[in-house]
Amino acid sequence: MISLTKSFRRLFNPSMHHPPRRKRPYFEGWYYKIANQSQERIFAIIPGVFYGEKPENDHAFVQLLDGKSARVTMQNFSIEQFKPSNQTFDIHIGQNQFKADHLSLDIPNGERKIQGILQFENIKPWPVTLGSPGIMGWYAYVPFMQCNHGVVSLDHSIQGSLAINGEEIDFSGGRGYIEKDWGGSFPDAWIWSQSNHFKTPGTSLTASIAIIPWVATAFPGFIIGLLYEGKLHRFTTYNGSKVETLIPSEKQIEWVVRNKTHRLAMHIERSQGFNVYAPTRTDMSGRVPETIDASIQLQLFEIRNRTEHLVLEDCGQNAGLEVAGDIERLITLWKK
Image 1 (spheres, rainbow, N blue to C red):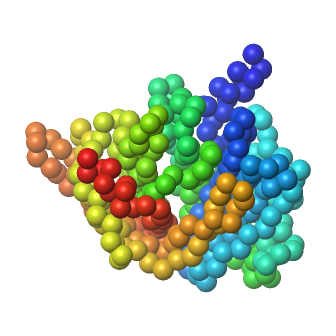
Image 2: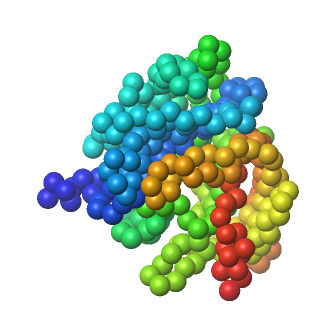
């Protein structure tokens, strides 16, 4: 009964730690994107844990992605220093703490020395219901998913500062975003993008499409959420939405989706970035190309009486973007 209670608690609290069941390898990582008020300093902080095929490879880590310098640093910790709560989202890695409304960093050694505390206010979580416990929808109930995804906060304000190698950076008045992934491995291919730096305050977009293994086959699964004027517009595989256009190229991505009431057109401009550390079967030596300096131009149309009416036209800056894996196969599966 206790184990069942814990399983249900995690199911309806996707942000909290999900320990591996039996199968290895296994990873879990949280993604904090933070920007100061002027948007001149943008970072992503990725705390996480990795369980390798061999227990001696188990460890925790904290990555720091610097959007200004396009530099990535990784600080590893022993698995004994990873201490998650089994009641709520509250992760300790060494002297560092990570929560939905707070993070504190104290990394005195390594390539980058980081210290400071940030508080997050007016958090906008992805809704959790019985029929759709988070961004995964009913797929959250499927126990054999290769990779699970969660959105902790689509948008929030920041208070506090961080000292990075002695440089004090004030994030007060800035904006933040938090998501997470966990599972056995990353998909064979995916496109992911996110921004909450639109001209219209409170607007946030998160969008991803990936190859999803399913029994003996695979399909292109997508989950897109656009928060606008307090309403979350969802375009997902599980709610019957359709991808009308998906054209990735070296410089940009054209992506159009539709549900029963709205149509969303996205034009994503790619930019140079860095290679983020990612899980393999044995360790965290994999690399994934990412930028947090892309841009997203979007148009949201409401469909009434078979006629489209423009609701929103905006451009999101400082966008996160990953285009990774066998994209040609992803497009082929979508076209079937």
